[in-house]
Length: 183
Image (cartoon, rainbow, N blue to C red):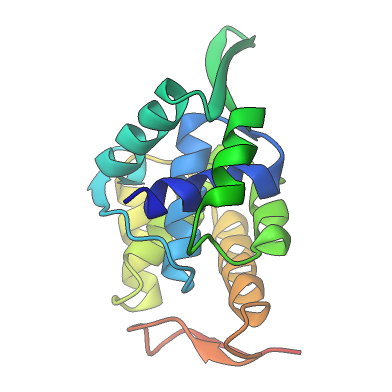
């Protein structure tokens, strides 16, 4: 019954700590898009893909005492940091069908800024469009992503797919213009 909650808790456990609600939203979305077994429903909002389900799951995990949500003030902005509690570790020890190890991908995602993950998630959201159209959409929502950011985001996406267990070469689903060659 709490399988999806266990996957979110396992993700946070593998990350150690995730700083920011937006960042966590984008991490789960990106992992889902590259094939990891997350089932949250996303819709497009101002900061890109957003899941009300994930927000609810985080609140419930905090209410159950499995996650610690701590507010931090940085540069005048409030950020929420998530960390698994001991009760959360006990929960995971008894949970079935947890998330497979995503530690490598999670470390890469967690090392990036929320703004960069926002761009990556937007490009993945529009992955059925030609690359140029996806980039236009990303820039049209009022963000100031430059061409260097976009190239870096597509390189980052390619690296995530290349390190996914399904093989070194893959095509971003639906986008015939974006092929990824693994090393």
